[in-house]
Length: 405
Ligand SMILES: NC(=O)c1ccc[n+]([C@@H]2O[C@H](COP(=O)([O-])OP(=O)(O)OC[C@H]3O[C@@H](n4cnc5c(N)ncnc54)[C@H](O)[C@@H]3O)[C@@H](O)[C@H]2O)c1
Image (cartoon, rainbow, N blue to C red; front, side, top):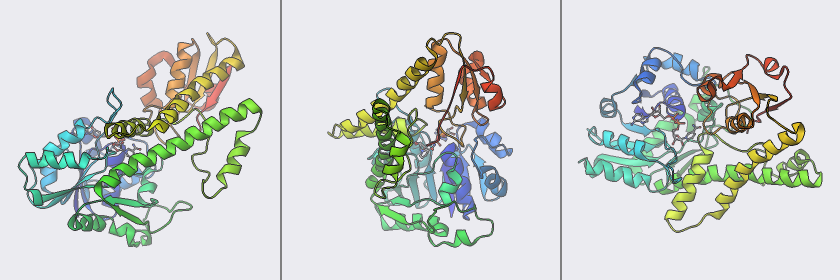
């Protein structure tokens, strides 16, 4: 099948490379010219395991890069929208990038196409995309809008694509569902996993993955609900950890006891400085906002967010209790990305804690081999970037490490 993926960031680039690997002809579109040029020349702009191999395998053959949305849509049967959906100042999702892509798609519908939301978007976005495309004179039966939320985790994004827990398809017509089923058929019929060059299967992966087919609205909503639930699990265990500290219990022993309950599971029960990254914080805010807009006050989410913010303050308090005053103290920070295996520092708790330490007058030496360059853009010369963890820790009064989720 011919596929256009619009937005070649963490999600679009990985999805595009993986679609090419399961046999589709993919055009990756981005409006960032420098990114398109870098990708065309063979550069890999993000740190993600197996991505360089897949790009090398398909670049220039089944995978091409372009800044021309119109031509890419004309040439494609399915168009995946994978642009950013950041928070606005009010906390709801900024859908202006999605709208601009929808407008660009509308003039290029030359035969039946499926327009697929890959970006995380609030419920009702598919209806807005449809309206925008119709307003720009596309015939109503010339396209469908579907939702195919992405559950990949940065750091294991490529493996997560092939060995996902489930593929969710939200579609409201048979024709559209059939097309999405066909796109994912190499995974759902198991043929991909027979290939000698398949990406290695991680432990515990279930193959072939089940496909969950829902209405478009349900698919949009379940992605927000999924991220909200995972963030809630993290805040829950952080709240439990705070009580443990007060009463002298060991939270890790408590986690073992809770996590072995098959109804709960051990994943995402890691106490730490809280969740961050480009998804959980903004998706919780967006889910909260969309619920309110439709008349439901989702107060549970307020508490999840408050506990998360509190973790950073609690951490700073701990540093104070270990070192008393902080001005002039040298601290080592090991890990700056929002978790291991990625260079993504968006809303990283490690960055936020480092900023708090700098405000307290500390000298900070940091080590993160993947996120160093991105972090340098934030801190400039305010932080010393070490080449290895030992150099960072040398002479430090205190050091910390980020715990991966
Ligand atoms: N990063 C993740 O782990 C993850 C996981 C699941 C879902 N998501 C969701 O996927 C979406 C994309 O996230 P991301 O992390 O890949 O974002 P990103 O910021 O890394 O990438 C977005 C890309 O879209 C491009 N873009 C913006 N406007 C464009 C336009 N009009 N035309 C063409 N390209 C355009 C940007 O240049 C950028 O390259 C978001 O909605 C996010 O919530 C992200």
